[in-house]
Image (tube, rainbow, N blue to C red; front, top):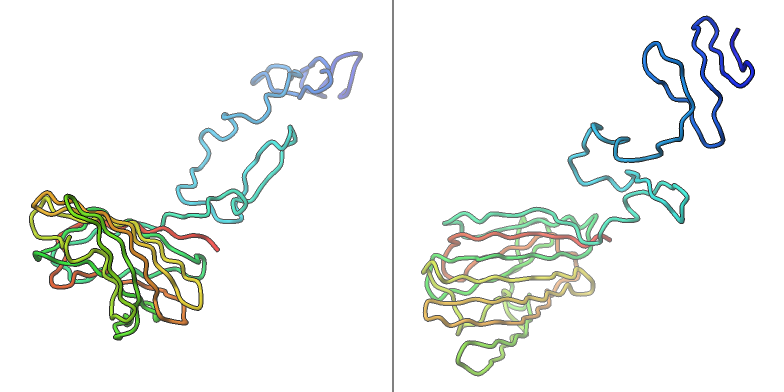
Length: 255
């Protein structure tokens, strides 16, 4: 018969008998043809997930994780623990292109950050610029009063300088005295934050660059995009020439 016989567990017809366990133990197979035994539970460990299918992507907001809350196992959605700043990809700039346009996911992200790395130009004494779009890149604002900006710059071996313009058709990201040229050792890099808040989106640009004369400059620039609409694309371009390389990393601040 099956059931508990004395202090042992009998499985009908199998001839297999296992001893009863104690509090907290679980019934565990001892292998084919062997009696089942009670052993201490191994709990949840790395062996529980080893060999499982890898997700291979950023989890969805409703994907769940298991954690210990003061010793009590609980599940939690990814939306509660994910970072507020998401990496959204890298644009590699090809030589010869005149503009680099980047569309923005304004449904899921409220503000954005761009990391411009070792951006090069094809033309000497050039200035890197930024423009905005409110129609997902179909057009970019270039009216005479679409931008306002102010800046501070410090250059090697020279006094610091300032620059501003309340009515202009673009946002220049490096000042004239540190124009970048064509030699391979000349480049500019920027960290740009776009706050897509209303009534006017705002930009902070912190950057640095060097030219062939071993002059290095750092600059701190702020701009206002004079639009009452959400910016959903941006354009980068040089004033007189095309690009000659560089990358742009894009990040989004979740809403």
